[in-house]
Length: 227
Image (cartoon, rainbow, N blue to C red):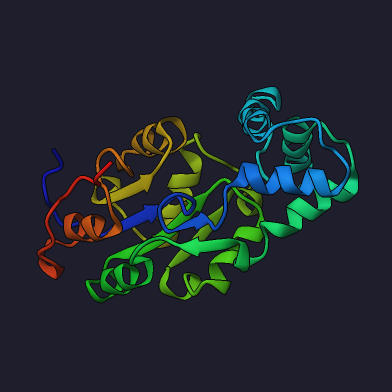
């Protein structure tokens, strides 16, 4: 159980916390592949290929930018069509392909009102910045730190140390990172001496994040989602 305490800063892995793809990514890839004449794979095979792509790419190669996402598209669809790869890359740079997490903007506003500094820390290229700006998120953050811009990525702790310097947080233990991956989010943030919460395990909503980070700003109760 998380014990409430006040924090100076909270950082988020944007995808899976503040925002989500509007439609199933595997289905989007499958439809695009079919539109380009590639009809051999099922949606589930596309999904498996996307998962496999992270491991076939190589541990120490940057997971951002057109080259990486072309690799993902190839592993997912089996197609080497540069037109297909470019279409998918452009699609996820459009804010219209994304939706905000529940109460994302009100929670960010409340964190700002409570003088809690906020940032996104994401393995992503500049498209994520465009998406965050288009959905009205960027203006409510103190920093947007994208691996493609700063040259370091999770699970290395350097990207978190860089973010803490930007936020002028001198004591890392007074900052918490909220993400969805154990290695890239929880382990990496803790390696930088931050606290870390996994979304869906340690906290179940952005409202709960607010309640835990700035206890005096809300009286919401912790609830598990009904499944």
